[in-house]
Length: 129
Ligand SMILES: [Zn+2]
Image (tube, rainbow, N blue to C red):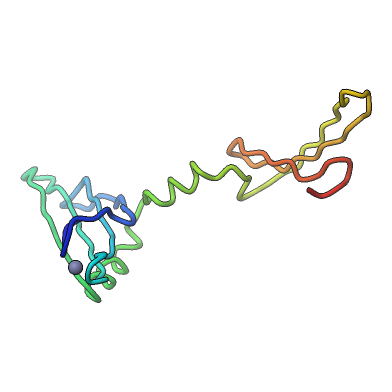
């Protein structure tokens, strides 16, 4: 993104199509030099195939994002969070596992798991970790 200097967007929103536009991408950032909010919206006109660009700075940028928030299908930050999240989230269920340790002791491990394949060991022999 560009204002006083070139900088990376803090977040990118992918907006749903409207009757007129598709490929709607909203770049949201804060200028590191002047600290102003900056948003860039790119959207392609379905009929003409041309790309429209809208730029908003400062308070109008916040209002602009607020007005578009209900059209956001997903954002880059939300995807990154999902990919980075090693811990279970959302609906969880418990898994109990019995293992034998090297010296022959039975170890009971309890895991918390979610429906996205994330698993976390929470208890070992009934001790909370
Ligand atoms: Zn600036």
